[in-house]
Image 1 (cartoon, helix red, strand yellow):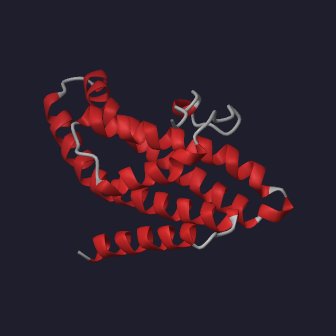
Image 2: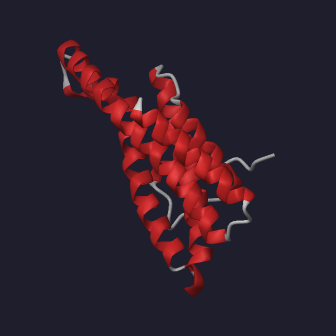
Length: 166
């Protein structure tokens, strides 16, 4: 209940900032905050799903390759969450250095975050997990920054271009 209220409050804050002609760094921080909430929520729910599936896969597998194969979608999600977390930290630093040229770094990182969120979404769908609304809000917050993630910044699974918003 509290978490849902916190999410709604953050969304409301984002709408207010946007409506009040917020500065570009404020808009970027709001998008980053919304994304952080969504990723945190996915991380918390996926931990239980991952653990439960790992137990089942371990019991069912007779070899390490069988277990590894059964865990691919779950390991892919974990990898996407870890890379998204790292990208969020770097993006926060870029926003903090906005006036010193961080805005260009922010745009590159934001494209990578959007691509990484898409990887999280794909992983959850592959696992048959319902997409939480917090992830949908995160994707909506970052879609304005969709573009091509520079290979130097991309995680191995997010090197492709993110779909451009239409």
